[in-house]
Length: 213
Figure (cartoon, helix red, strand yellow):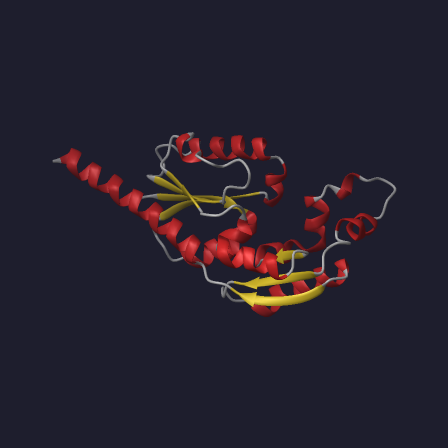
């Protein structure tokens, strides 16, 4: 079987950790992390990128959750595709129960995964389009945007480089004037989506074997 990965750059670390030794993944493409700010454009871009590899792979692991516009995307593409369960990348990591438990514990939480930690404050400036505000220091707008937040929660999925990711997350918290907390999580949602993608690949292999007989 031949499988592909098309994913958000913010989940690259976790996805590479799980798939780097898997020889079936022959195509990998990571898209710009802030695309979810334009849901319709993101959906169209992802559809185009998946359809561009028709015939090259048997199935695609889509490293995105629903992200406001990706419901039923598997029905809109020409290659069998599996996305990650969840409303966004943080729920994809934590799972719905833990995600909402953390929100209930502190509604004003900014969630920081390894990918978000790597993006740092510059990632926030890009996320909120603060680079467009000529004549203003982006910190001025960050202070306004995060004035109702209380903490930055670093999520450690156990993929290595924890100290580095945590320090980057702490740097963001300091800039945003937030308390910094940490917690661990598993990668069950990502593993399940990868396993489902592999199953689609096995089915494609079986069809080829059947047709060859």
